Image 1 (tube, rainbow, N blue to C red):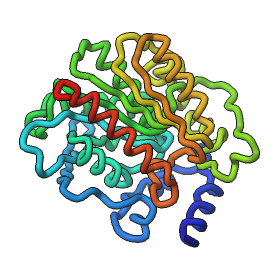
Image 2: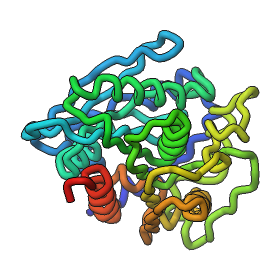
Image 3: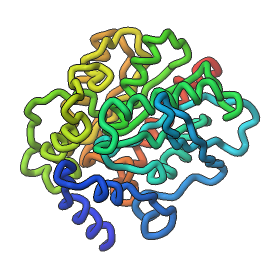
Length: 318
């Protein structure tokens, strides 16, 4: 359809060089996404039969972090808990854009999904984002009963920068001796923030690019600032100890400069003895799960993720 063509062209031609933008300009790009046309033509619509509620979590520095809780209406008892961290290069993104995705996962995987509006750069440099995600995770575990969730069957998930945060949270929970973490679903993750050359995509792939190496470097520099240690596993979980982590799903996009990083992380997990399922979606650009309106692969990826989450978080009942 013409609107799909126009939208895809606009998205693939846009480029965000975060370090050249003011905090006010970036903040305006983080606005809430209304769940009405034409936005729903792109992002989809929230699943019916799921109640979404807002809460606030007090972070370690006293700041109140917003979270959104999605729970199926017809659940008769406590459900497994899935923590979700959104993408956007640690600089952009809003949890409202993920309402269709989160409610679909909640309804079909039969889980309580908690998505976290962590603070972003440049106003809040690393490691604020990962600290917010950890603080929200611990709050959700402590308040699982009132959320209608189970603290003994927990998963983490995130896309792009959110995949980095999910991987870091998984490692931190393991290090803390938490026994309830059963799965991690990492969608085109960015697990390695070290400064290095990023290979450009082939010329034939560039029409589909929603993320370029220049944008990646810009996001990294804005997030880390002058004091961020890119070798710290809290910021680059690819450099952490991967043994003893729960099973992982790693979903990748063919036309994505982050694909090699995701492949390397999946291979490292497997080498560390972690059960890993890796899928690369042909023809898909970075960010595709958020845009089911023009990325057919988004629906297949959603089906796969729901199946993996349901299998691992409901494993004892299968």
